[in-house]
Length: 167
Image 1: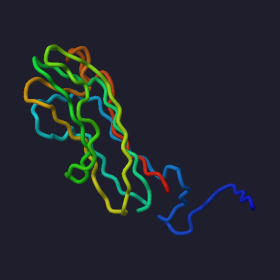
Image 2 (image 1 turned 180 degrees about the vertical axis):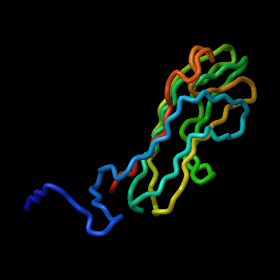
Image 3 (image 1 turned 90 degrees about the horizontal axis):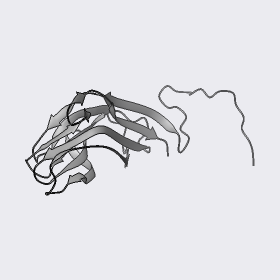
Image 4 (image 1 turned 90 degrees about the vertical axis):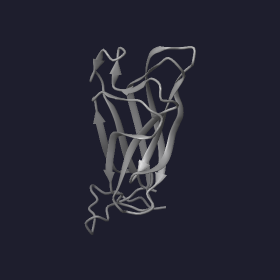
């Protein structure tokens, strides 16, 4: 067995790079502390979007979503669904009953949540990943970056991150 020791690696042709399996090739973030509020049972865009162009078609894209100050308020049952859309089309369902508030409950419930999904890059074409959400019914309100039942907006950060991982 041989051992290769180097002080630096320089790519021969621009854009080819050195891809070592398991290592991160690139990372992009969307970070926000803006208060978001919506109601209704159809999918809507949260505004959390990342334009991403993989550098290697064989890589894996690790998509992380961390949301704080997620609030639900209603007089009936309410859950929040989250979905990653790719170029405006539903791509990867993240959660279907997050923060369930039973029908006997009412008032605010403020929580935080994190989700991860890994998807193959499949090609090196540019694409846009977006976070969509919806509730299980049309009563009540759902929020992101909501603190103290709506009393303190913009008090924390939520984010979406995509890491391209070499295979």
